[in-house]
Every structure is written in structure tokens, then in C-alpha cells.
Length: 180
Image 1 (spheres, rainbow, N blue to C red):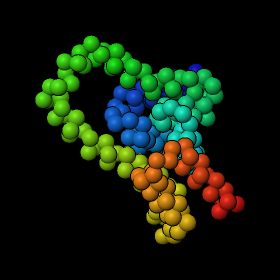
Image 2 (spheres, helix red, strand yellow):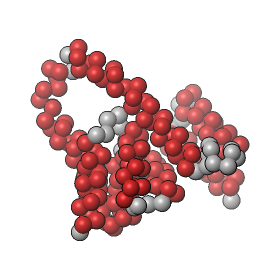
Image 3 (cartoon, rainbow, N blue to C red):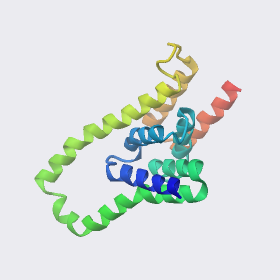
Image 4 (spheres, rainbow, N blue to C red):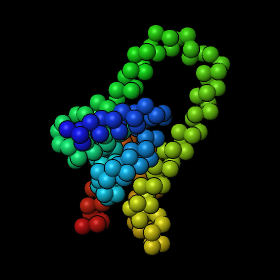
């Protein structure tokens, strides 16, 4: 039961400081997972891949996956609840006041200050995942096919009207064809 409580506290803590969406939470989740020794770096990367390709918020999906790998179904439930409970409580507290606060000049200024930091956190998460998988860094070898897949996918995301699920599925299918 101690492990389950630890999962709840950890993901509740992450949920309390998570601004900018799920991708901005990845560095925080990675740090906590590494400190607790819950997953190997490869397993953590797999959890991000699974969480990204599953319906729902990536941070919650990641928490559920890590909870499941760590403490089974109860761990999945507890980690998921821990990750969303802070946001739920905050939304319930602010819902009555938000319509008055949203146009306040100080509040808007605070959000303008937070936006670039969130973008930086998301970029940092992408770079860390790339480094952990030897996509960049490591022994200096960069897989040209992976770079081509990344750039092609980025181009499709930016300039086509294709649904992201289609692009992700196509990339997975191409990975099977190329790497098996």
C-alpha cells in the first residue's frame, strides 16, 4: 500500500505544478520516475509513446501507464486520480471567479509571461526524449531515416489537413516496414 500512496503523492505533486498541458509535464514526470526508479529510461520513453497515441491527455495517460507498471490496476487508478485532482480542485475553486478575472490586465500579463516558458518546457521534453533514444547525441550517430521520418511528419502536421492519428499510424507502419 506504501507504493500506491507514493504514486498518488508523486502525481498529485506533479499535477499541482503543471502548467501548459501534458507535454510540459513530461520533464517533471521523467524526473520523479527516475528518482523513484519506477521505470528504465527506455520504459519511460515507451510510456510517452503509448500515452501520446492513446486518447486523452498525455500526462494523465502517462501517469496511468506508470501507475500500472509500478503497482498494477490500483496503481493506475491512483496515479491517474493524483494527476488530475489538483486541476479539478483548482477549476472548481476558480470557476465562479474566472469570468471576472480573465480580462484583468495583471492576469493577462502573467499568462503572456508563462507562455514562452511552457513552449520551452515542451521543446525541452522533445530534446530529452530524442537524447535518451540516441536520436541526437550519444555516439554521434544520427539515423538519417529517422530524421527523414521526423521532418516528413512535421511537414504533414504543419502543412496538411491530415488527422494526427493518420500521421502517427503512417509513421508506425513505415517504422515496421523500414526497421524490421
